[in-house]
Image 1 (cartoon, chains in turn brown, green):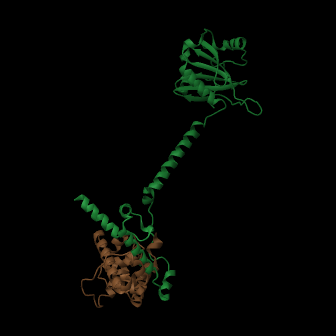
Image 2 (cartoon, each protein chain N blue to C red; image 1 turned 30 degrees about the vertical axis):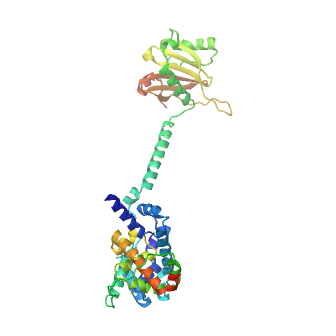
Length: 160
Length: 257
């Protein structure tokens, strides 16, 4: 269990999904691990399994605080369709990361943690400090919004 | 109202349904999924989520970041305290089982600690003593020591001699019977404290046929009765009394082994 909780490749992917930028993701990832190394040297590592992800999340949010924030506009939504699988196969990870990182927080955190496929829903609730109804709402909304975006990005598939 | 709330919670759980089966440790979640497993909407959602998770796994790790992966643990392993270990149901169940097994082992060990050749038969005969009524015996009014001749003359039993410690007591009755292993047992009822005496063949080595001897007196206990047993010339003698060792001790000439 502890091996999974400190899965460092997943920590990097989390930063990447949160920021949508490889350089920024690396900065936050390195800063988080430097902090961890310093704390480990002092014997002050927090006694909880998710602290690396929690710490990285706040660093990601801090790093984008000064960036241009997405306008709060109504985003199109479409019900998740069977064609989505083939549409997603045509995406590259960077496009997905940019889409997720553009979502307002805490939806962004919820989507990033969920699609890492690393944590169960209770662990996500713990890390993102959400209630079940909130997480459910953010994920459901994220799916329909992403489906609408996929439909607009791959209209030929949508027609098919 | 309750139904609505339950359906809403189930819908919430389904929206958070795990992508891979390894995250499926939660009972309410399993129950929600099993109810929705065949719905087209849920199947589409799962396919959608799996496709996205596959895409996320394709995110490559830059070489500079990958260097960190060999670092030592940055999350402390939670140390198990002895209390949490003891409270673990598996540990608790195993501990109880071990204690019970150890208890049975100790009980068996202690109860057989004072065993001697013939002790099992002696215990069975204490059971016979407890269930015998005077009517079952042939009335004989004599000194116990004189019955050796009777056993030899009438039943052909050699060396069925009552030891000197009990030879002078008056008898009420006696009989000879076969036990469940067809060994001939002589039983004598004394007037002294309603004591009963038994004479029966000593155990023998199964290979050599030699009598398994033991020195002095040995005690056996069964259902509130106590017997003092000694061996002489291949015959075991047991004096049985309802009570404890202290009730028999005054009659024995030599100290207990």
